[in-house]
Image 1 (cartoon, one colour):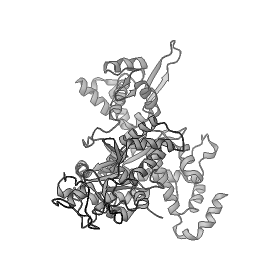
Image 2 (cartoon, rainbow over the protein chains, first blue to last red):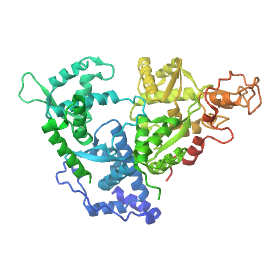
Image 3 (cartoon, helix red, strand yellow):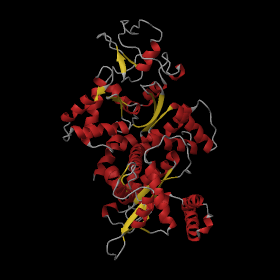
Length: 268
Length: 264
């Protein structure tokens, strides 16, 4: 095996650097689909780690971290299979240990956190751990009109109970002078932006309504939106705009409260 | 053990990642704001220390916040750069192979020129020489536009040069391949510049550096070979304090030579 070869060649130079400390709490997934990705046992991880130098592990960690940052910058989902295929390669046995360190560095240096949004396909997104504030320092940074549009759509979905027919969204956007099928100055092809880009970024879910003729589609919040956005803040903003007490939307208020307490629970 | 980072460092870094490049005054006000938000101790004039604390933690990740000078106005800028394997790792993800080839060719054209500028016609003509995949002039025009938008190239009156961000990021490459492309005054990499016409001398100087060095001199002479300096002397349009002092190399120079590419 290639690992054995590597071991013998590097044994002498790195005897002192050996990683003695090893992963303790490997989350072992039983429903792994890809056989090659089956989670190794703790002792296997230990064995693999002990064959590598600290520098080797650090270097891989840096590569994985860069890969994640690049993916995040484009708001593309971060898939475990991609990390293994493009970055880790023969280091895949120590995946869990590397990812744990990446997450730690993300928190300590960048103020961000890796969150698994799809446990079946092992897909992650990066979440900002810092409270959003208006630094008021950026010149019109690109992408902000798109963020505004996305925010409006997410707010409508939330206020209307979580699921909204596509036609309702387009009617609402028409009032804002954003029209389906027309090229918009900031958004370009709006339909493509909403039904493809935002969906690919996992901010929105876009699915066919079953058994309708003609075919209809509906929107829901995507997994990234669930993790990134505070429903409470959104509700506060909407009530400010509508000049109403946020409590007056009882269902939304309850849901926002629930989301707050569960996110507090998971972050500890 | 390096000092642990605080929330104010993290927020600063996040903002830096969003912007890519920031001038020194913006950096200073961002530094102040970050400290205020997180109730950290703000020390005026200690921006470089603050940035260095972040850099200590970025180094293992092959990233670095580097300081450099704008060739247009002589101002200092900070940019987050990637030191991994190739200088273009970061760009590579946004551009296809033939687009990158065009960029590299345009960069060489700019660096080979006397004044650090290349006309759009000359760059578009490069499209015919792109080998990875055929490129039409029309496509090349769009690529050029995108490179300007993404702050890799800058354009003025139909002439293109390397942007401040590009120079900061590509500095090791430029120093390596174009060893003469260094300003005689501030010792930073010089792209947009004037060149001594004495073929035995051929030193370069940034426009803002030329303006400062020859200020008030009716008959300027090359600081190296003492030949007459035949170029038009640009006007000094910013305050003296913003320019790097000639006696000591600019802070960017110090920093880049100290860090460079991390080796293990």
